[in-house]
Each structure stands twice: as C-alpha cells, then as structure tokens.
Image (tube, rainbow, N blue to C red; front, side):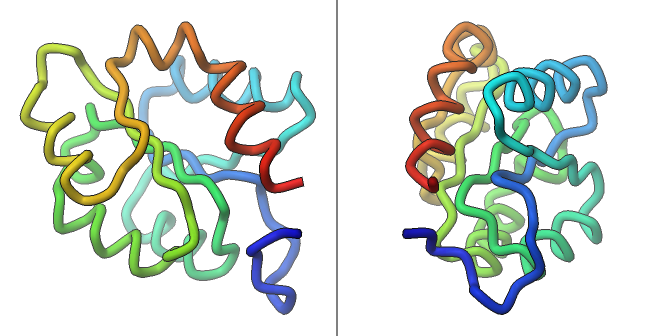
Length: 131
C-alpha cells in the first residue's frame, strides 16, 4: 500500500532535484522505460511545491547543484515529504557533500558513477516498493 496522501493529486513516482539536462534525461528516461514516472524539480520553489503537493515516496538529489546539496535545504525538504526516501548522488571527490547528505538522512548516498551504473536497479528497488 502506498504512503501517498489519498487526497493528493495523482503525481509522479519520484521527484528529481537536478539541473543537469543530460543527467535528468538519463534518469527520467530510464524510469520511463521501466514503467515509472519521475518529474524534474530544477528550482527551489518548484521542489517545494512538488514535495508539498505530491509527497513522493522517493526523491533523487543531485549534490552537484549548490542549492540542493545544502544540508539545511535537504532537511527542509525532508520535512515537506517525511515519508520519502531521499537518494543522493554526487561527485566522488566531493566527500563533504556526500557526508552531509548522509548526515541529514539521505540513504543511499552514492558517487555519481555508481549511481549511474546502478540506476535501473535503484529505480526497480525503491520505486517498485511503492506499487
């Protein structure tokens, strides 16, 4: 059974916090091929609105985005969607951003290369739980 608010409009299976168009296309395209709908929130106001309105079960966070990588922003988003699993990914050399994401409850937190390699499995595992 879904944790989604029964009174909320029919929304996506997951929300993606990202501004990288190529990476966005890879994530949304892979999800679509597997039968899931992931929508992009590339700005803070849009992210807040989507999280409040849809309360997605999964939120993908690109830690390369300077705003979305801020711990206080991630904590605020987690309060907007408390039931959501936040899955973060970023550069393997940005150990501070990866550690900060872990510290605020993102799980898993992966280097971008591992996230990319495991993307189909991550989508099946975490979005499949919502069916």
